[in-house]
Amino acid sequence: MIVDAQGHAVSGATAESVALYDQAVRAYNLGYGDALGLFDAARQASPGFVMAHLGKAWLFAVANDPAHAGPLRAAVSAAEGLATNERERAHLAALNAALASERRAAVTLLDAHLMRYPFDVLAHEAAVLLEGFLGGFRWVRERTARALPLWSKDMQGYGTMLAFYGFGMEETGDYARAEEASRVAAELEPHSFWPHHTVAHVMEMTGRPEDGLGWMTAREALWASPESPNQGHIWWHRSLFHLELGQFDAALALYDGPLLRTLRPVSVRLCDASALLWRLDTLGCDVGERWHDLLARWEGHADGKSLLFADMHAAMAELGSGQETLVERRLDLMRATAGQNSEAAAVYRDVGIPLVEGLMAFHRGAYQQAAALLHLVRYELWRVGGSNAQRDIVDWTLTEAAVRGGLRDVAVALSNERLGARPRSVVNRQFHRRAEQIAA
Image (cartoon, rainbow, N blue to C red; front, side, top):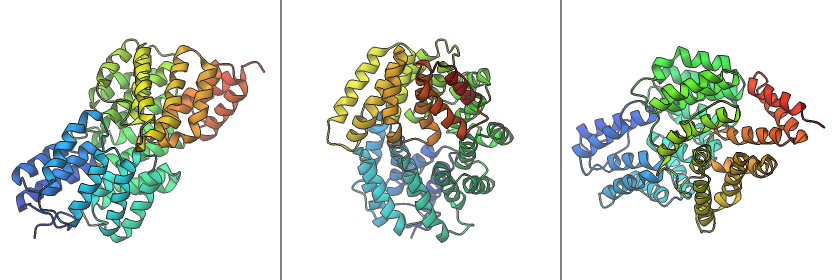
């Protein structure tokens, strides 16, 4: 019987192909190496190797990008009809749910599966990333907490599991334990994306920009190597620290340099670029023609129905480029989605439409209208998905709208909120100073 690195029986594999598969899963977990190429190599070595096809499918499923729907469907189809065991059928069922844009159903299937197969680190990561689109990072903490006691520290993947646990704790506000676990995970897996990413999040959310820059600089060779496909997101986090310190030119230089150089044509990574340019734009920085270049990169990656998180950031690029007709078209697509009987309908209806309308009002200079619309959705914003740090772009814009719209009470209240969380932030101090200057 052929088994993978965590001891699971795999159908249709050989010793050669399962070795390639194990390397692919490890590359995927770490965010280090060519996971797609390795899954393909395993498939070519053993065309009947079910998990090699399904592993490739997960790469496309968790991207949640309409441009990847075709490759996802092809990889799932390649596995269907092959001889499968129970574990493989669970993966296939979850992937079919994801293919139908039923992410919560997919995660629910994976959740039950992971109670039976707690060492299935491929399924763990799929669940982590799908939760990222559902605002469910609390469940990342819980899911890894129930599995970790069953793992031994010498098992391949233990460092990855610890890193997932750290990220789940960070997103639920347990910052000290999140940092501690992630620093341990970073020592166990020095090239892993996840612990570097989580420590950056901790330092962002606890207002420690100097520490954040120190952490990133000291370990840059590990997270920013050519083998690190997700490094662009960490460059984005680094730019946020520069913004907090008032080093706007440094943040813009990161955008022009490593962030664009490593920018992948995937919606969740394009969101980083939109979010940084939007922040710089609101700060009064001259971003020039950068919006137009970014808008071209967005083509085909956000369609008004697949992922609201992507649509809101694509709308930022459209607005920054002065293409309001594109935003109106996007809103029409979002309204059509909101009227359907689908998982996405409610979040587009309740959050997405007023959110994008608020961004448009802000762009048009209708700041009081923008503040009203963005305030309407801020307490449901978790449903958009993404991390706390990523969703902060909405509160940032709401605060700026309140300041520009002369809404003194709102502006002072929101700037006090921001200062309470990150008192050393130059941007937050600027918000507060400008709010206090509004005539009572």
